[in-house]
Length: 388
Length: 138
Image (cartoon, rainbow over all chains, first blue to last red; front, side, top):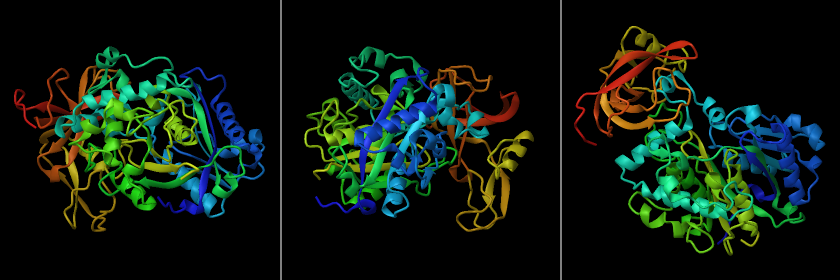
């Protein structure tokens, strides 16, 4: 496998993740974020004052200039955020960071996301604020769950994807989460009866088809691959990033052409072209699943399966580490590990390739980070281990 | 109206009890969401054509949780995406006036205008009725 160097070679050198139950963060949002960034620096063996760039997504409220006094920042050279609501911009944030490093605009860039309910409100409401207009309000739609439910219903009822596949995915997430001491669901596997008979949220979604909401912050430090070699942990290389939307998809009042998809078809195509890789080269997937059906749609869009063979591929035993062919969400993902706007999936992308996952995937070399599905703009990234 | 900007004539016409959608005056494309400039032909001229509010359910969800929706919609209620029979099959949003109905994609529906209340403001809304309630098609 030969991989061209994305933006001249950029690597994740440190990760930090501070997660709490919703409404229970010990500090306001900015304080939690500072803690996550310093954890990422500690992980890398890097002086926080030397960070000169920051990128976030999803309408984060923490303007980088306000972080400077706490971090001791010497010079701020890049402060940026990906446009777009939902978690659609999570992987794209790494692309901006890499472009800045590759072009010499910044040397050490932190990608971050912070959400504490007391500051930014309920996460689902904070996400939805981005999308509200009178068209959807007058249709009684006020939550991401309802929009995703409409698309899920089309996938199940019209395209005939069996709804049973969502159980396989959720079960796999909980299997991993139950074995991850840092997961909200640590020690608790999915109660199938509770899953199948959980209260309805918005049909076809029951309670456990929906991601959690947590207080917290996450940060990943990116530097050039050269510089990363001298830092504490083995570098995890960014192999490629694709972001955006194609004509016929976007903020279209539910007039998207591939309505039942997660919007990734053109993005995934670009990611595979960019890296020369294909789904068969992926050893492990960190899958942003805001809702169960969108996780399935994302795997389909990325080319791991299709409407016809979805039940052959999305099977519990196939999705779990260490022996499954397609281990997914080795930390527990947004369902079981926790949900700070998906940042846990990005952190786990790095950890699993370092061999630090609570559910290791032996010899994993390539990890796909599939970002927030179903958003008007979506993004995905590929990470590679230092041994690739 | 707190629409999206270019769709002001849509909201104005709802207040008159009519549903009008935007069509490019040059290339006849139905643009929805409404646009200032037709992205296909570059024209800034548009007509607003009254359409028959008949179509089929393209997708639906029955909501059981109180997300703070307009007070007129009491859970469980059904939100629908409706594919119009005309206007190049443009999809419009709305609610079904039968919250407990067994709903299927493809069910024929007919819409009318009602008002809902959000943030103490009245918003015109499309309320859809299944025209052949027993029919199950897709």
